[in-house]
Length: 334
Ligand SMILES: NC(=O)c1ccc[n+]([C@@H]2O[C@H](COP(=O)([O-])OP(=O)(O)OC[C@H]3O[C@@H](n4cnc5c(N)ncnc54)[C@H](OP(=O)(O)O)[C@@H]3O)[C@@H](O)[C@H]2O)c1
Image (cartoon, rainbow, N blue to C red):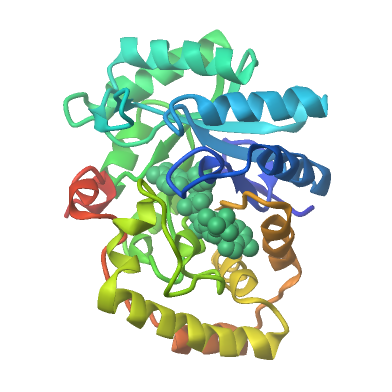
């Protein structure tokens, strides 16, 4: 397995990380046994970075990972656990904002350690900036947890360049987790150059645009209630038609390369810099195998040019989140 570093101060990880969210939430029903088998297959293949959030299935995802790691009997130090916190939920599964107060950070962390069955997290980050709490205070509380040994590194998620600078002035930041794909290139103007200037790595999510850019999405796919894609502007109406047209164009490039669409999309993100680690949301061994195959796809300059012609920057139709959720993205604030 190839490796990369999360920024100048973060850990060395596998070049591709496994995003575990879809095993518990947001993408319809997942098969528990297959999810655990997928985590084990990832570890066997040399994937070391596992990403989760305490709010994915309200603790379900962390307990699943904890169970998978215990069953694998893996040395704890051979795996990096990246955990997000801060989202407030209710019993019906609703969302009611974010809490980044220092006492909330300490509380969220205590529960995560317990659910994951570990004495430390490798990277800890608030999922969305709490507008009522300066980022310096939230990051300061994580820095105290680093001092105490509960956390190894501090990350950020979906923040603007300005917030990134403010956070980095408090403590070293290993990586910014943010959406980045052929369909979502918003970080290229300002956020990515700032991260590079500050020595902050990027863990890219939505690399397959949540399945839309995987080559497996179909117009008639049945979505269960609560599936994020049912509410996502990119997956509906004319936007879906336009976006699947872009996937068809990318398929031609992928076919010529002897790679799948998903592998080409992942290889493109990998090609954007050694400081970027794609998190792939595989929840079956078949999808994982396909995703890891991207590591064997070398994109030459002419391939990259063909990909850019197939999916030019800004070509995807529709915002990456529904309006109410766009509002929570510090990274989208102008
Ligand atoms: N910081 C943040 O705000 C944030 C937000 C979202 C996610 N994340 C993290 O990033 C991770 C990845 O994000 P994501 O799951 O939305 O992104 P993704 O990798 O773009 O999409 C995953 C979806 O793509 C489909 N897919 C099709 N072919 C695939 C293949 N070969 N390999 C993997 N998936 C394939 C899967 O569907 P099927 O399983 O139905 O085939 C899966 O539902 C999450 O698990 C989470 O840990 C972070």
